[in-house]
Every structure is written in structure tokens, then in C-alpha cells.
Image (tube, rainbow, N blue to C red):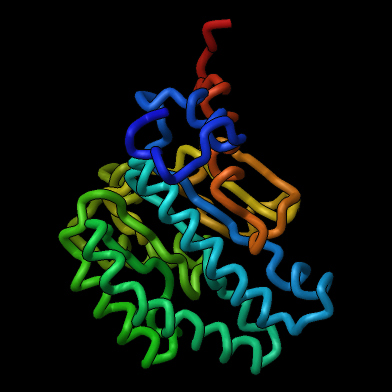
Length: 256
């Protein structure tokens, strides 16, 4: 057992077995997660949908801790999409309230563990009180080096690409033949951040839901039927082990 996991996982457990299988020299640099299934989790228990979101917050905490302990450099969490505005108003209001509570309660955790928070998405649509708390947390954690947590809020992949095009067109000094993929990527929400190596999607749905459309051109997908509120350390470790069994060819010819 590696020293950093002693006292965290039980010897002989499934988690311990998975950790022993991981090659810590070949970890994904960037993991993105579509956190799906909160509503279904609540419905299965005859609870209001919002209770699923509350339970899902515990999964966020465990995944952040696990990714940081693994020394994953970037972790992107899809927390609120532009399409989520179609949900009942009461649910939306409660979701934003939970996010505000999260921002207020995470300050010490982020600073103590050298973590950085970055929000991606259309900030103008985020309720002002929530945006204020999140931007405060971004400023306070700006020097965090251990891991960057990207929180996708009021986010849509198509909207991100359209916004990037608008910014690019506003740069009058650029000529058409000077624009390449690297140039365009600098106008997205993630300039300077490597594309996700691994996408985890919970609840078994087989779609990317308008998430990081540009960035996930060569991302490896790992889909689990586990609903997000039930997602734990063991599932994250399973995803890492499965990822390391794959050969990433990026359109080229593999070794086999």
C-alpha cells in the first residue's frame, strides 16, 4: 500500500486492490465527469428530487479528495448546464442555493489542500449572489498547485464554441490563414488547460450532453450505471484502472 493511502483505504479491500493496479506514472492529467442520476436516485427512494442533489454533494467531496490524492492535475465537474434552466423553478433555485453553500463551505478545504477552483460557463447567467461567492473562492484559491477543479456552470459546449468564434472575429489583427486549432483553443473557456484524457459519466446514459465538445475530440469514455449520489472512491479508481488498460492512438496506428 502506498503511504499516502494508509489509513484512507482498508487493507485487502477492493479499493486497496485497485490502487495496487494503478501505474502512478501514467495517470490521466485531466478527468472530466458528467454527474448524472441525482433525480433518479431520489425517485427510487420516494424523495424530492432536491434530496438527490444534496446526496450528490457528498459524492463531489469524495471524488475531489480521491483525485487530489491521486495527484490528478485537473478535474472538471459538469454541475449545471444551460439546458438545466428548463427544470422546475423551485429545483433550480435550490440547486443554486446548494452551490452557494458549497462555495462558502469549501474555502478552508481548498486553501488547506492547495487546490484551485475555476468556473467555466456563461457567468452572466449565474445568480449574482452565487457568482459573487464563487469568484471570491477563485481569487482566494488562485495560487493552488495540487489540483485545479473546473466547475462547469451555466455551461453549454455549443455556446462555448460560438462565444469563442465571436471573440476570435473581434480580433481584427488576425488573418484567416493565421487561425489554427491552437489559436482557436485560446478563445475557449479552457485556455492553457489540457484536454480531458478521461470522461466519466454516471447513470449509464450514452451521450455527452453538450459538454466540452471541442475539448473531448480524443477523450476516453468510461460509463457506469451507478447513479451519481452512489458514486464513490472505488468507482473513480475503477475508471482509472480501466483507462490505463487502453491504448490511446489519437488517430494513429497502435502497437498491437
